[in-house]
Image 1: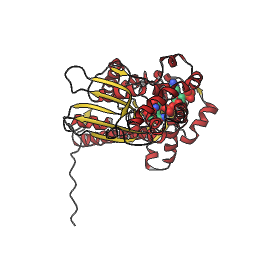
Image 2: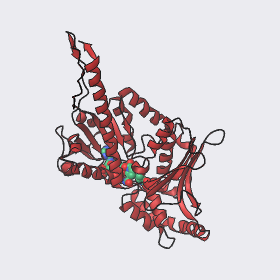
Image 3: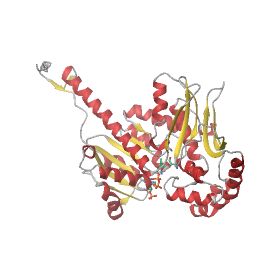
Image 4: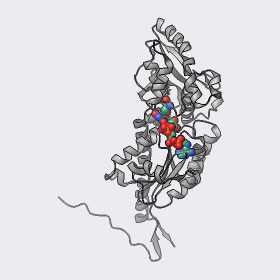
Length: 396
Ligand SMILES: NC(=O)C1=CN([C@@H]2O[C@H](COP(=O)(O)OP(=O)(O)OC[C@H]3O[C@@H](n4cnc5c(N)ncnc54)[C@H](OP(=O)(O)O)[C@@H]3O)[C@@H](O)[C@H]2O)C=CC1
Ligand SMILES: N[C@@H](CC=O)C(=O)O
């Protein structure tokens, strides 16, 4: 077989040096939060040690709300938590960017539910530091913060990895963005967006107390650190806002009507008080469950966004009693089930279903976003190399 002739490269003129290539050094990761999700992420990274994937990632900073530890040479994922407890210094968000300094892509992974951390996303992005987040407080609160994050990405040439924020990595945001990129307008979105509430209503039988199921969902790591975020509908409101904004609608939080499962008095309780007050939910939910059961229906906590009517879109979140043929009713466990109507899916919606909470799926989604950033960086490096070989030389 004849060898394919190699293209001849023109010699660079004297006085010219190749344009600098993007670094192929391992990505430097700062992990904020080592609770349910953060610990699962460290375990997953530990499994990659010694593999090609592991070689490309270096954890240089780990923190919880109290302590932090950094090592530019890399922390062992399995030992990081122990190291933090043994030799950590007080945590400070100002220490994150300096800890990431060095070659390679710099990536903050937010596995907290902290507003203070979310308030820093835009700043990191503007510095060229990528942010990968499970926390919805960045894109799912005010339009101002969401816009700031978008602008910071453009300014810093950085990426905001948000797959874990809705559906714990299910292909929801990516599908909506894909439809839009293909010229489709999103007409409506409806679905079960909370993994913990899905789990609760799949298991609740109307016989045993609802409060016991809430405690079990919290113990399984499905709820937010403060389960009021789930039971109040706030977590679902944030997810619906993230979906709406990814569909191009700059919807304000106040535009979503929320019907909470919790009485308003829960807002004033401390964490221990919340646990003691949970049985207040038992009687009202038993009554709603019995009512639904008599009609052959099932309780589901549903989010709806509808842009089909003239005027402002309608958006609401709350408990609904769904008939047996309702497309949102299926699934089990922590399954999210989401229907999307668009130009091409007018009559029959696109349905996406799968586990929407849990440490493993969420940690995997965060690392998928990290790897997508590395792939994009590698492509950019390849393109820059080709440009410098071809015509991308610059004069010093
Ligand atoms: N659990 C799940 O199934 C899913 C969770 N998520 C999201 O993932 C995030 C984390 O959830 P989860 O792991 O369950 O929560 P946990 O409560 O288990 O863990 C939260 C972690 O964040 C740390 N933390 C809080 N504030 C700060 C701070 N300022 N700097 C550094 N670390 C901080 C906490 O530290 P300390 O212990 O000191 O308080 C703790 O280590 C949340 O935003 C949640 O919405 C998303 C999808 C699914
Ligand atoms: N508490 C959340 C966790 C994932 O976002 C949920 O129940 O869905």
